[in-house]
Image 1: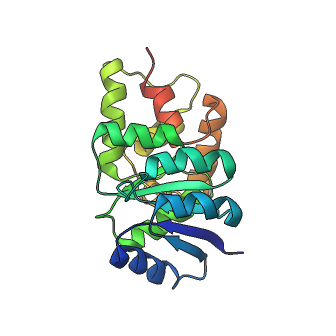
Image 2: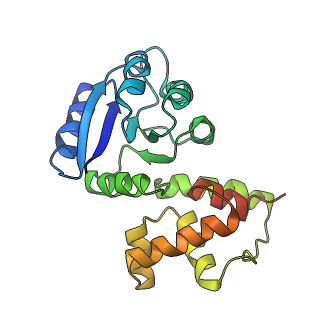
Image 3: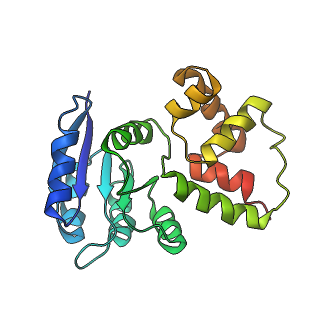
Amino acid sequence: MSITLAIVEDLDEVRDGLKNFIGLSSDFKVLDTFKTAEEALYDIPKLKPDIVIMDINLPGMNGIECIRQVKDKSPETQFMMFTVYENDEKVFEALKAGASGYLLKNTGLVQLIEALKELHIGGSPMSANIARKLVTVFRDKEKNREPVKALSNRENEILLLLSKGLLYKEISDQLSISTATVRQHIHKIYEKLHVQNRTEAINKAFGKN
């Protein structure tokens, strides 16, 4: 069954480009696209897509506020930020609003497809420099981070790679293990840390007071 998507982006060339490229993959079905948050706010709860690709800088209501409002009406929908903004304030605001992924618009389209698939199976993909920003903030709280005692050596290794923004495929390549094995390890990490996604796991490991 195809992963259903909606796209919220005010620039016609970006919105149409995303729709056309993603539409080439049989793994996805683009249900609709929107130029404004106001349109999306009305229609997304009816469509209930699996994933919404969301820009931040929209005319009128911004994408972050749109997520905050839509999330209550369509709680199963996952949100992938796709934006030029990489300042700390926007990143944290978007994640707190309910976004599970955060990619910059310089991300390659092939990598975007992989990130959307990862998001759909419970991952929290983000551009590497965004992940580094999160890690830097958490490291500032605890300079001398030790491995998480609840996790095995391999799980700590994978958690560190997750914190660097690597996708499941990139982790599997680096560790010479299958993507399925990576997924199993990450599932165990989330279980042991009592978290739901990458951001929460990094926060739990790096952000202790």
